[in-house]
Length: 291
Image (tube, rainbow, N blue to C red; front, side, top):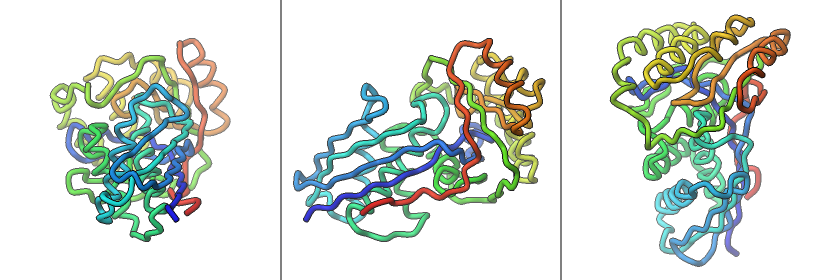
């Protein structure tokens, strides 16, 4: 009998974007992506559908499944029929690719009825993202925050977790999502690397436990480098947010808030065009749900 697997992985937002220096930090958010993988006997053939955004490119689906099949040396034995569904908007700076790759890798491992350790999953996920060109640095920070939840600080080039923080407070994550999309392969990397010395300072703040300060610093620096308007983040801070700034390479803006501040920030943000998503800090691990 040919295998079937399903898995879920959770969202993340930027604390430190790793493009400038190779070191990054991210925060897990309780948005999600689910992946269903049904193995077939059409060896090497992967057919994928993104149910939530059917017009999006499915290269990441193919690369994620093939990366796992090759790891277990069964790429000449199996293909796959794959579906993903998500409440994370694609190409908005909300780690949709890292989350999807985590879910796809886990679902394929489940379909093969294999067991591997967490860091093997993460490495396979990052490998797939690099092959699909959905990441510049490998996005190990995004993948690890999506996988483990809470805050991870990472060296993306060495694929190591430098530090983790567990968030004890009950915090809400507000996301403002403009209509435009920003794809990683179109990013101006040279421009972002100009701010590397300042991003190193922000990363040190995060490493010292001042991760909300780091999030705001990072957002201001990258928004300036990329030419984004920063009024959204400043309005959120004025309304009482603990931190606010650009997520990833944009265009989404994130605000970290206590519950009693939500309405004030929503009032400020409703004057801007775009969608607002409300979530919470995620503490759950990504996991296989059926195999």
